[in-house]
Image (cartoon, rainbow, N blue to C red; front, side, top):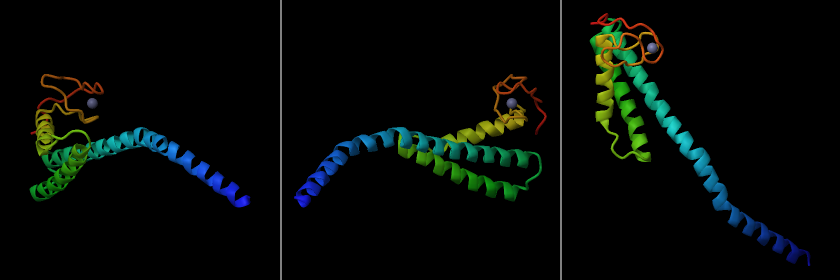
Length: 144
Ligand SMILES: [Zn+2]
């Protein structure tokens, strides 16, 4: 009697779990996974690109010698690539090192031309006199 009752309860519980499981894991996947992974990858990419920018800045400002600059740049470039590859493993299949090179080129050009904001680091378009991001006045041609 007791055994039959427990058995029935267990089966009912198992069936309930079986029915709910895909719903629960589906919710988990859509609510947690998508956002967390994207944010994490994005964050990694941003942090690395910011670090690369700092390295470029320090080098141009004479705070880094070329050897340190090249070594740091290689490290951060590898890190940025790893972040971009993690990104590519998700949804975008064609995110490659060209993107990193393009970013670096853009950062370097912005630094050299003075278009990169000294206040917030935003890379402004050619011809800008004030930062589009924070409004800081840009010192065009101050570096290099
Ligand atoms: Zn700014």
